[in-house]
Image (cartoon, rainbow, N blue to C red):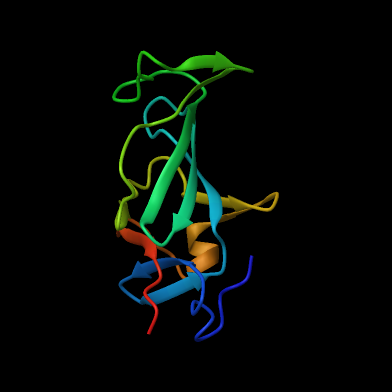
Length: 137
């Protein structure tokens, strides 16, 4: 998963990450966001699409339950994961926080997973990172 070169977003969509240190663009249209719940230590995964309308949450999965992470009633248990399709409009921006207690957010694409600090090129710590569709110049 390589960063998109300058101008690479033209004619298509790409995923951008904004941090206090700048913006990083990735030339991709679908990805899975993975993290571990800080208290229950249970894995959570979300499948996303990058579209001209915004970021679309396609499916969510959680490996178990815990405080603040109960699967909705429509979730089904499949291969040890509660899975469901969230019903929400595309979002212009998704803000990711990190308590520092559960490890880093991971982004998976084409069979590879990398932490967000690996992607943006610097530690994130307790700071937030904003995820959005890259805006064409």
